[in-house]
Image: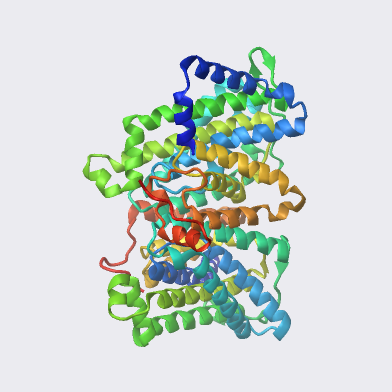
Length: 340
Length: 291
């Protein structure tokens, strides 16, 4: 569907294309003018934040077929880095950003390095453990992280000369980073590095025999994903204004994971859609919020049964390789699609 | 010195429970050839099952063990139907994601049904101390050791002596060859899943009796410990997995003695990372999966 949309768009005359793009940009920039309710702006900000987070997880899970589940851990590292640097040491928010990203990437790399020679499951368990360990460390290292009390009153950043306080202002920061993430990642994926990642996903042995250094590219991939997760955490810290370890439970990691899986892995649009779907579902399920994660779990299982690549995932990759799913669809009365 | 010995003994008792979890884990991974994330939740369900069995039938630890084995065996059938049956031939990550989804469902449903708070499980076994030489043990610890030993020996006999056990080993080594020899692969995988989950259930009961408390969120760290222990056996070799569990228990107890109990789950993680650095393939022999 996305391809059809793209083909239709590219078929338009150039002036019209520019006009549509400009209109879209103006519309997106004016969103806080139309949606003045801070409740709705909060949801929009969450959607944009999780676009970056789920997208960075998708870089790891969807493009090299490694399987990280402890993304909340990297999110936490980034968040605490900014919180500590800006509230304890009075750093400017914008200087803490690269530190948070790079620190997260380094820590992620150190944790994942022993697993790159093994099959994916080892990485899954190590990241799962790491996420829980980070939470425990944050809870118990009272001197640095405030322990169970957390860190309060993280200073608001300056953006274009004004203090960013309301959700409507943070919207622009979240938007900036979501767009930056998508643009940069799109470039990386078109480069040799991105192609190497995808070849690892499709067939490790074939990739290796064609000269792709597995450990090097897996490490680059993992560090890249962790970097953006750390960055997302760094932006989240002043937005939420109060960081404590309860934010970063395993459930948070599963929340991010379900966005990537439901939206679709292996495409840039997938996690964006997933972030929309899951966050709006989150609001709809608010009256029965205890069942939220049950529903996500059910959706994940149903996705695997029917459409393992997710809603708009890479249907031409091994992520979509599941004959049983098609059988099920046929039994439910859908016709088999003809493959051209 | 006495202090060190008592830590060591506590470590062995706790390690034997971890060993039981790791046994179940390696049976499941060995027989399905796919990994599972539901193990921790199955352990948690075992604790709840035994709690209700104790309420209904009185505080008999053997009846509790049978009850939690049966309940978790049934859970194993459900997990097999949801996560494995259709995906034995599909790419590995599909079953993996499926088990993550299933574990999210089980864990959160358990929190809704049973409540999120910690529940006490007291006085299942009389609290008496027994002195053997310099070693002081409680009756409970002896009971735990005995149950784990009996189950481990029973499992070993089952796999080496009985027809079903041999069939399961064949399936775990090569599914295609096994089906060519006339074995029903799906039935064997189902049976392996039931046994693995049942053992996890018993382990869940033992750990909650040992800690005298249990809760719906305890599954996550325990599942990770089961995994870390079975990494020592290359995920599929039960004997080294059990040994890994023992090591893990001892390391954990000494670690807590020098730091604090709030860091309990960190030692399993350090153990896992160390094995991955030093001996990533574990100690299983090459050439097929060994049970």
